Image (cartoon, rainbow, N blue to C red; front, side, top):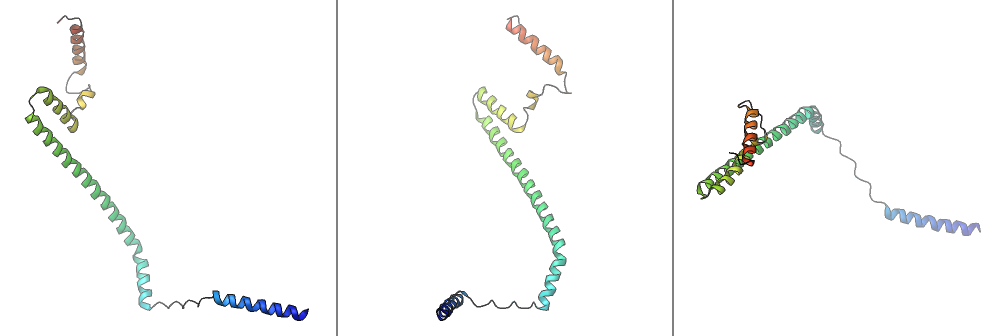
Length: 145
């Protein structure tokens, strides 16, 4: 029985060795030692990393400022184009209703319609005007004008 077990163990070991030999790949080549020039360059890059990262931060800030400027500039150009287009159209209309409609669009586009929403102003006595308008509306409703 001992002979049988030795032969089976031997055959099993042979099979394992063959399997391991098939799965093994050649070892990787050793890494080359860095040259003195490369070592010097790496140490120089380490020293320059902080200033370079600060320059990149500045570059990012400049990019943001440029983007912001271009965005506002293009918005201004677009607003100017729309204003000119509406004014040209206002010169071509034939009825007051069309002219008024375009005028309201132009006022809104240029932000000149805010006075309609804000009654208060230091330029005039808004309370007095509000009272007179209310009186006129009441008289008109009573047909007493």
